[in-house]
Length: 213
Ligand code: ADP
Ligand code: AMP
Image 1: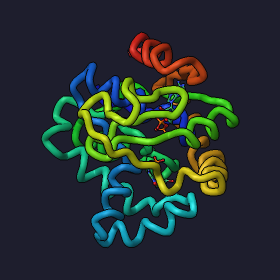
Image 2: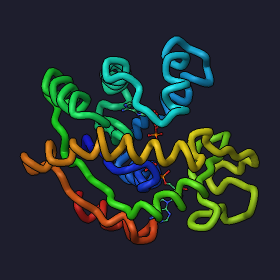
Image 3: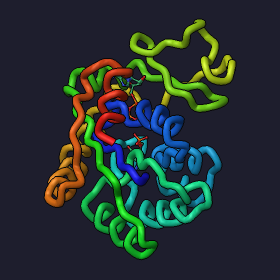
Image 4: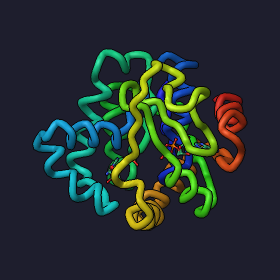
């Protein structure tokens, strides 16, 4: 099963990817996570990406295409993968089709999750995650069952993303509308796109996604 979760920042792609990962036993490939790891590591890619991410812009296509091309070739993707945050431009979408064709693979579905702009800002403002295992939470919509303790790993350290602040969020939403939303018709044209209402609660959105698949 090869899937793309598409949608603006805060739509719930990572949240739904966690459920799909558990359901299908395939990895979530979050380019945002990969870049944050590169920044933390201080690698060349991280050095190039840091200021771009802080400004809410997109990292150059060439770097991202190379990153994903290497990643989908790894063994844990043998049974499929869930792309979260890639592709984000038409050039990335075209390059993905080319790299999949080269490996005689194809996309099973592209799931576009739509959420109102105001709700996106509310979701991003309340987002945090477990430092130890990466599980995502929200102050109001998905707090841990026991305050201060991760449901998944029992960890007690949590973090908020540096780019989840009001100004950067506005820039990221603008970037999404200008550069990423135009790829929706690219996938719609040949029937690969499915739309899901992301305004429902987390469980209901996940049920809708699974029903589609
Ligand atoms: P994305 O990966 O698309 O940027 P996330 O999955 O990180 O978005 O979700 C953003 C925030 O909104 C997280 O804190 C998450 O817990 C919360 N969230 C996700 N889906 C929903 C939903 N359907 N209703 C309410 N909150 C949600
Ligand atoms: P995300 O975690 O998906 O919200 O991504 C965080 C940031 O990483 C984005 O705002 C971009 O700066 C960068 N990024 C992630 N994925 C891509 C991509 N496919 N193309 C370009 N930049 C990306």
